[in-house]
Length: 163
Length: 414
Image (cartoon, helix red, strand yellow):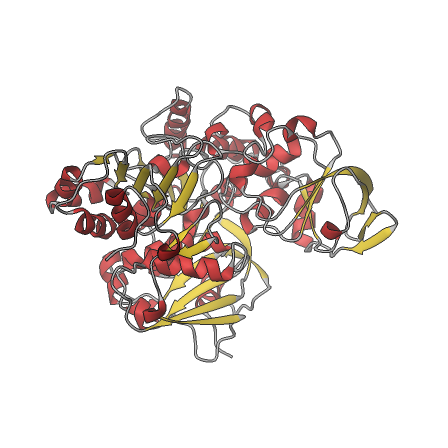
């Protein structure tokens, strides 16, 4: 089973898509151009501090707000390995899976961790932090298939015989 | 066991009974793409290896967020959109007719029982005519354009039953804000809302539209009203038996039932900076106001402009307040001009802009700065939505917003 360890950044409840990427940057040409402005209304310095393999731990309703798919794309472009939250907003959830960004729902971890902690994730099994285990549930098979294909674009390329 | 409205719509679409929690693939009746996302939809569509649209007549492209262009780069979106329309034989394109959600119902693209997806979270709006409509991202939109299908999880339904007569000065906006406050910003996540009761039966389709529009602010997948004679008139159709049957059965299973008495509603505002941070206007009296915005896909319709005009008639906005009025469509603009509403607004000192998303998405016409306060009739008051992250955005009904514009501070309506 796939396991990875990363340093965590802790965010609160209702992190909306205008916080993840404000509308004024949405017309920039590429996701890479937008990435430095991620989370800027809340924590302008955060995008510059995130390193490849880091993990976001947040509260409830992460990704609420608009349908902008740049939100998960930018989080992925910043190098975030996965987002763990108490719950996710519906459109953000679909967009993340479609872009191959792993999301994990867990509502116990938040009260036990602080920013900078290292945690280990065993996909579809558990999260481990400071010796304590937090069980996590599995994703439905159709979503696992999209994640395993590397996102919806690759899944469609396979359907259309391109790969 | 009976069915809820969403269960009936999905059943009719795929031809078999469904239950909440099931994952099914539906056949899409209509899609809407707007200007911000068309470049991404176009590139993902081709990257996926598609060479033609599943049904060009079922796709609608609408320029609204970036109209007219405020940054040089915005024009790229129009160019790519125009090329896409030409290359794939699309006919349904609106380049400056108004806001996408207004046009989808106004121009007859959506009818009761349809399944519709759009690249915008407020696509829930079309539930006002009994359609299952929801927002998706551009990658999924690209896959629908190629396949005509999408997987969905059949949602549980929360029934919201409202009975009685609304007090004067209470608008549909006050009802939906109160509901969002009660449910919380994630209270309906992954779920369908179903509105029932004589209060909503007596509402115009346009008032219902304000409510279904904002359902997403409680996380809802869709928000449904049973189609009736008003729906038929609005859509310009005669209802079929199948459409009339889009009513929650008496023995349908609801995950939650919320009851309201219409007489208990009061004018409210969503306070900075969460839509579920809802308080009665009477608790907020006295806060100084720098700007008022009346418009958007939530409250930019003729009845909204007329409600504001009724409050503003014979009065003038406070000298330091900018009142920005943005009709939701060109048709509404014409109607408001023809029936004298525009004249009342103009005489009261309103800045009347072209139909578009305008200030709601914080890109044009009225950006604010640190410490300023705006009373706005749109659907979001998130940090940084209309300028800097230190702007205070209060969401309100058109009537409440108009009264604040005159007073230069938050006031209750007499």
